[in-house]
Length: 562
Image (cartoon, rainbow, N blue to C red):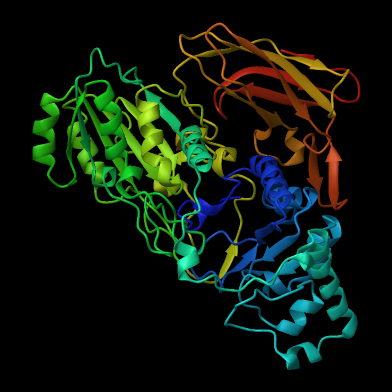
């Protein structure tokens, strides 16, 4: 779960800024990966929330905060049967996460009942103590703190036997013992070979388009060919092709060990695909690739019917971002052309960014580094081939001052507790709130009702979602729980969501929001576990601030809505 807005590896994280979101997504991901016979290794277990001085950090976090905010996605991975867990070398209370008995033995293998193997992230404080405290293996290929015979010799036989059994359990469970021996390096020729298929290319397009989050729209989108005959595309990011190197991040994939180079070159760019799609509508497209030729851009904007500015930034393993601004001074370009002509801003980002020009532009959309189908996704959204349905998994802040910064050295105390992201006491700090995302159509929410018969959880909320707009679209219905003040919880926390099918105008869908006993519980340090709450208000809406309906859940006596 993200904590530092500029975190260099934020783009890799599945959870965004919310534990429930991460828990839902990680179960589907782990099960799908392991269905193919591949062991899913979940990382980084612990509290690795920044790249700055990553191995020298010492984190202090409260027990309740750990279980309520940071542990749930890992616990969900365990429940989904993940075969491997990679510990973080970040220290917790003075001890490396890969040598912490509290993290690995007490919490992961004890309370969460993890049955797979724990692998080191890279380095360890002490091999022998790490094994004794829950580590099962060192990461293969690591050049630092390798497991040597002398280190193993000082480790008790039973400890080594237990570690080996955890590893072998996952190997036998997925029948990896029957596979041929894999080489550490597949060779350059194999790595460079074409592995894409037509089916997977189409899936990449579908996934990228589904990831677009429409943040603002005054009515200029989708583009109407009857009124828009000339488009001006601005921004150096609009035409910047993907990098082909293994490690370097770009505007399509973040950098580091998880970087996946897009191999389709300029076809991945927004300018290329917008131009191709515009040609089908006989719309003329002109462009300026420099962000500093502002006078030329303003003059050309006068002759256009619509201006599209593409801004972007990226991040990488090994370093945190130094700013939340988009790259190459594109903010200045946007601010200059927005008063001249209706302007649409498209952002390709690895996480949260600042949008100081948001009040002066006609539309804003964000796409989190989406690979080779990025340009195709933008074109599909702009021309209405798809209706955007994405929602923000994080907060886009009004100012950098409201975000948590990486700390250079020393003890890092999580004094903010659970009050990060949308859980802060002042939601006005967000330029665009968690869960926000517009559509080309509109939806109404019926009065919710609590149902018991057939409910697969502790409580179920039923309501009807109706497309009352003029275009087809899908809605993501979100449910946020409000607990009693005595529980020490934030004002409201995400506990359920449901994405509807694509509904035609006038069409409706009956939605069931399932709440488990865990969803209605809070963590209590005094009992070292979860205590179910019996009177919980649930806000239902289209984002963390756009509440449409509310329901009261009382699991002991009665339930009512209002």
